[in-house]
Amino acid sequence: MTCPLCANPDAHDFARAHGRLYFRCPGCFLTFLHPDERLDASAERARYETHDNDPSDAGYRAFLRRLADPLMARLTPGMEGLDYGSGPGPTLSLILREHGFETTDYDPFFAPDPAPLQRTWDFVTCSETAEHFFEPGRDFATLSGLVRRPGWLGVMTRLLDYDDAFPSWWYVRDPTHVSFYRAETLEWIAARHGWGLERPREDVALFSRR
Image (cartoon, rainbow, N blue to C red; front, side, top):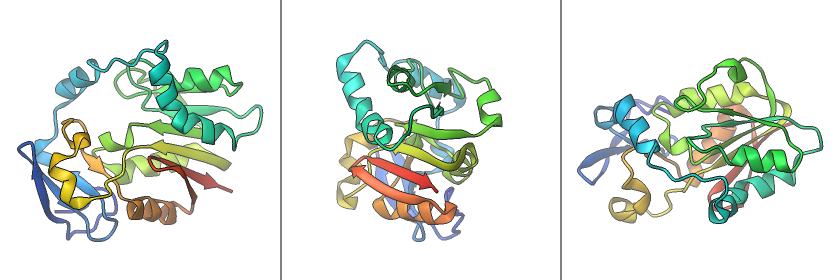
């Protein structure tokens, strides 16, 4: 199986979980779902529509601030950004705007206007989105092209730390979660695109372009 991140042709069977087959890449250490087992677009959207992403929910806001706070600490006033994969209830962009950082939403299902993808930004956020990438190599290349120099890409996703626990890991239960990253995977992504990498929290990666 060919890795959808680094294109290594030698990805191998890794595990079965919830009746689905996952592969592991020996090059970038991405773990990914067999392409034949991905949901189709209508089923994928239906799953996202069940998410209760309420901008007025204090708990949800606190969760998103795991990414927003360390990112904002590195931004300067007047910077403009894009929330890539904003979902059915855009909230991260709202938090950033409340703190003076104008932020536009993009989502292939819920905010599909391609105009924001035709320019560059001072920062791009990608919160709980990278695990949904069918083709993470293509998506990270897109993200790289959206960030101007100097700029930041903030990614929040749970990392796969313990291989033995994968079949019972709660994060793999969601059938729309198809790509799982290790710390080594983030390092590969940073090296591939010439980014600096900081890990202010275990599930937050801040990629920098100087």
